[in-house]
Image 1 (tube, one colour):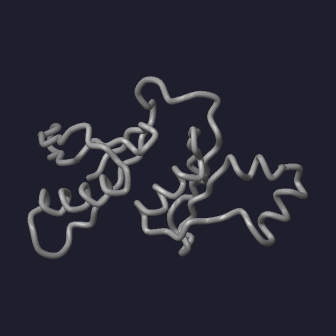
Image 2 (cartoon, helix red, strand yellow; image 1 turned 45 degrees about the vertical axis):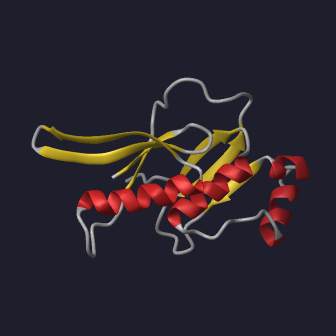
Length: 142
């Protein structure tokens, strides 16, 4: 069976967008240094190439790896695919209070709020925030 390998974003500022998503998931920010940098340079990439890229990786190896490459222009239009970021429902407070707290944290990191969705979709209740990352990529906080 196939598995999800990497999620790749094109960005105006790949290192900055990688830092945003590292902070969203609480992962340490990755630099292209040491053995990894040597391998990448030996494979034909240049210092300029590495300066226009970013990497986010789960230190536990559970979540997907995210790569960030330089785009040839700003984002235009709506995403054709987006990430759903799940907030665990644990501890005190209502589900909305928990979502609000995480939404506030992500806004402080540079996200912007598009809207709150609170609706029923067939048998499934939907309660989530539609957000944008600092480069305008939409994602949902559920």
